Image 1 (cartoon, rainbow, N blue to C red):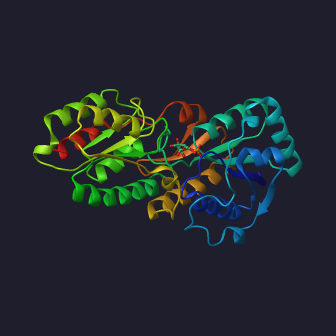
Image 2 (tube, rainbow, N blue to C red):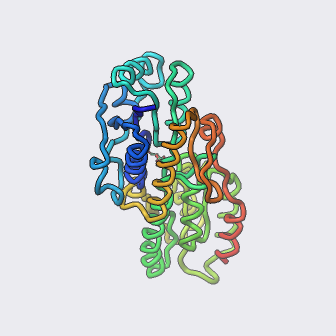
Length: 323
Ligand code: F6P
């Protein structure tokens, strides 16, 4: 294979740039030309394709976002949209694709491969860390550090005013950001979509009164928690526990930006090189991941449909340490 397309798709994640750099430079070593595609599958449909030399990826290893930009476009979900993309791939002479993104990206790649004979290799890039087949996704560690830094600041003011704060973090379908950031920041409770009983537990904790030993509390809420977002939960708590001074902070997209941590840069570099190796070996329809420190490959089918499970032992730790 001599010509490979490269794109980032879905929500951006810190470390994507480090990964693009790794793909371009590893491919160069093997004599493979990399064609960068702007704005994900949308740019593929529109033919926004240009060759990336090793120099073009200089000075980006430390930058958040993705210099190739990212987008979500429904047209790619249709056969007509995929056909347009295929025609662009053909006219650029691209023989294989490396795509960086989350489960939506891999589902799109899988569908595309079922219609057209173009091999795809995926790299997990999402702050949510919700993909099966890798211990960590690119961007998760940076997002965790961003959240922990913010919660540390919130704790200062919460303590000064004896307040209960609900801090909402990202994770539409997954509570992995909430879980680890909550543990790292000493949260009193964590509400995540994977655990249906956590709201009852919260009420129990409030009834028993953390107040006997503590005057301020932090509860981390994953945006996808089934009991509603932080505002809804806080309203409910205000009604039932009016003596508590309750506040809400929604961290939002600040979690998606910023300089990638060293952990994310290393992960991104390893996965980028792993993806080039995979496509060079003729693998296709797989996502490259890292499990127990080793590079591993999983079929798109598994990576996109089987979400990473929440570590129950970490949930228990939160309970033990919140006493
Ligand atoms: O990147 C993943 C994620 O951050 C989810 O946790 C969140 O729900 C979603 O993306 C929001 O993305 P956007 O605002 O770009 O639609």
